[in-house]
Image (tube, rainbow, N blue to C red):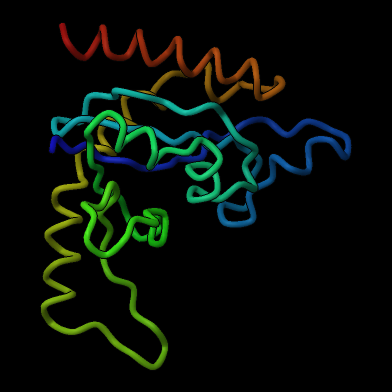
Length: 169
């Protein structure tokens, strides 16, 4: 099974007035923005970008809405993700997982040494997805987005094509 890297990122936008724009405010980042989920290959090249969601949406909710795990299984792919995606893969115990994540510590249950080493190895493998997002978010036009999310989706997908064309030169 081939694997990719999956991550979400908030694209900061200018604040629009009115109550309709409150859903674009991200409490985590304390700013207005739009959430994008991306899938990259092992070298950090962007392969897929989700539809743009309001900034208040969490990454795991956006993936569930897009039925990402079902699409990954249908394509015979797996993905490595960060701790924000723990619980996304709802496969049985004997099935191959579509999304591999690290371990989270609980208040009364600290991580063991082997779990910490596993998290460190997954973090090293996940680094290319951050480079893919950096290439995508390097565009100035994304900082000035003040439109409806459906138009921002078309913009982000067009930038995906342009970014891949530039990076592969």
